[in-house]
Figure 1 (cartoon, rainbow, N blue to C red):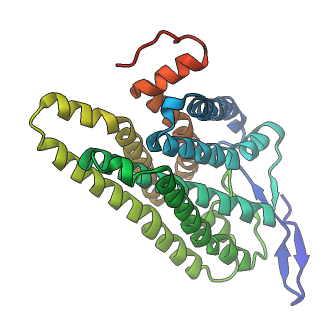
Figure 2 (cartoon, rainbow, N blue to C red; figure 1 turned 45 degrees about the horizontal axis):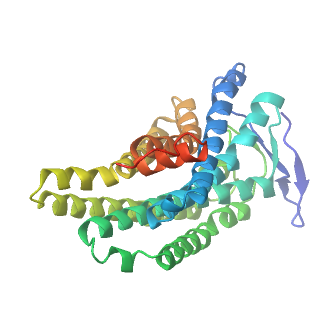
Figure 3 (cartoon, rainbow, N blue to C red; figure 1 turned 180 degrees about the vertical axis):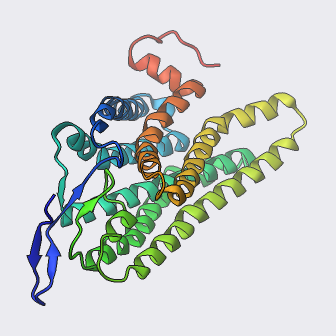
Length: 321
């Protein structure tokens, strides 16, 4: 495809749009991926909307633990919606072009929602830590005001720290190539097309990942080490089992989320030889967790299952265990 160029004030050529080529190496038949991706997207939207409606409808779910789950559902919807409509447009209608401003906006949204998901997992880990290790103080510590404050602090942290990512990318000079071998505007995928030095972009991208996602992951696992230490000191096997069951669904999701991040990062090392692997995993990591999170909670949380039954009028006589 011919590169679309404009002339800047300094008489330098600058591309006016990018072209998202899709999945590298399978361009001729990549449209077949649209059906499973569309189904995953619809599942993510439907399941998370169901979570939100159920929490709003069922008064017994008006607790901090479920407020955080509702916030996670909103983040999941935002993350999936940031990328999937454009990917489906590429696969269905060959709508590969994207303006620079739209690309940088998508870059900001992806990074913000991804780091926000990590931050909410940290908030949920703290919630479980206080509930299990300090059960008597839990109602006075983890209140609705606490939920609002920590959520706003995470939004502020992520929103401000991610701003330099698209800003630095926009300051680069894109003078020749404009074809991105990807389905979305990833930071490194876009800046690799720049004609000038991108060292600062790479450095900030790495520092941001270590500072936000790395610190969140460390604090989450530290919280669970303290939880496990506290639970193992309980004398009753029944109390131990009940304490662990209250956070099993959360632990399942964070293990999947952070393991997927590590796998996606590692596969970038093999990107030159098998470029489709990091691209496919990157896309799946943005749509599978939003579809998986509500399903795991629905399967492993009794109160939420009862809420679903009441919502659909199936459980008026259902009693809680």
